Image (cartoon, rainbow, N blue to C red; front, side, top):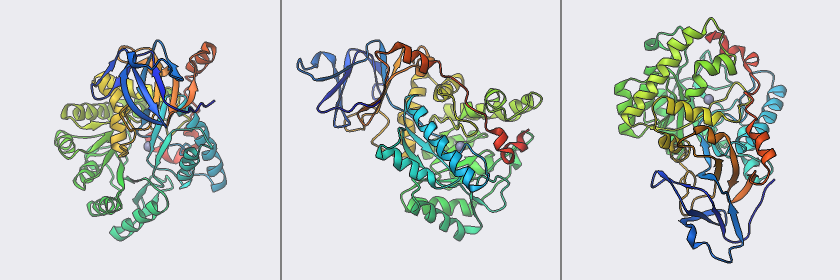
Length: 429
Ligand SMILES: [Zn+2]
């Protein structure tokens, strides 16, 4: 269902996340006009003749969540084109709807096996498909011969890199995504394979920036992350290994970091993605998951701008994937209020769109209203009552508890796709 309004809209009845105050404020209301926020005002100022009043009594009102690392269409493997296109379109439509039902109103999609993800983004924007506002990258750019066949844009040398960046942006990409390093559970982190050299990384970043486009990178080992940060990259995605000098440099330069902790956790790989075996789990835990978590903690301590992303690349994600990532950030030491901002305002900053991410005058009226107080119970974020995008209501469970219960119970962990990605996961087993 969807509801659009004429005239001023007032949303009230619950505490509102005021990102400036870094707190929920009581007895206020959100004022919306023409799909944009006007203000957070005292509820006592509600006009007696207000026509459009949305009362969410008992719930907490937040800006819409922003998933900072997800893939609308990349669940499928590298099978033949017809199957790849069909499965990825169906996955994309399901994913987009499920994200909205999770309170996610915008997302960053860093890397797809084909450029169709830009079209899905545009279909969502046109209203033909229900889904979050998407910011998309096309195929990853990676050095020729890299043993990660994600249908990348393969390159050799600075000229090739420059051409690839130009082609992807001309083809509709909102951002450029590099794949810089990848490893296995038995890796020696100091010699983790690298797929682009310093010069190639620097050219990619410089060329994208010339075209006013941000660059992120799949990064696991330290040398690749250091080269990327030296080149002035905008986002480190995953960053499994970051040392003290690097997180200091990231904090100084303002480099964003989306660790995707939940996606790389041992439990997720073992029980949800089913991408590692019981026997390999302790090795994965020791060599990857623990080191990853320590890197995130180092980055938190250094003041790096960390944002929340789910990276459910191996399955149609559980509806509570964002909650799981926010819980993982808090579990690693982030304060709950910072984790809520990491899933809203900081994600928006990393994407670079100043029109989203918080309830402030002039921003897009994206709201996610949850049953309960997320600061004392993060699981409240798995209980959306109402979701609004651009001032339009896309989910409204205020008056239908049975429907709410049914949606909230839908915590299915999704369909593992590891059997469809042997080329990707064989190495980690
Ligand atoms: Zn990813």
